[in-house]
Image 1 (cartoon, rainbow, N blue to C red):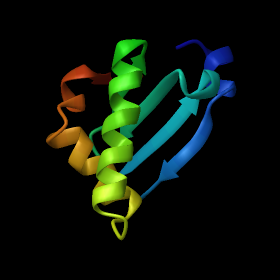
Image 2: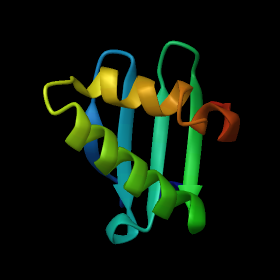
Image 3: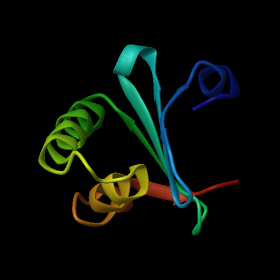
Image 4: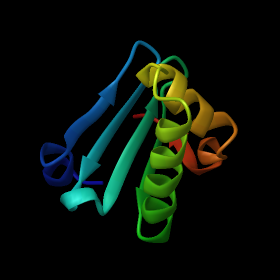
Length: 87
C-alpha cells in the first residue's frame, strides 16, 4: 500500500503484539505482528475472508483481547502466510 493509502487507514484493534487497520470502507485490511515486524496487506477476496473470520472469532470469544483475537487469526487463520517483512 502506498503512503496515501496508509494515511486513509483507520485503527480497528491495537494491542501490544498485533495491530489491525482497515481502509477503503472495510475493503482492505492491514494486519501487523509487531514483535516480528511482519505485515499482511489484505485486499479483495482475502479482505472479505479476513472480515468473516475476524467476526466469527470475535463472536465466539467476545472476552478475548485484541492480541488474542489477532494472534488466533495470524496463526490458526493462516494470515501469517500472506505477511511480508516491514520496511
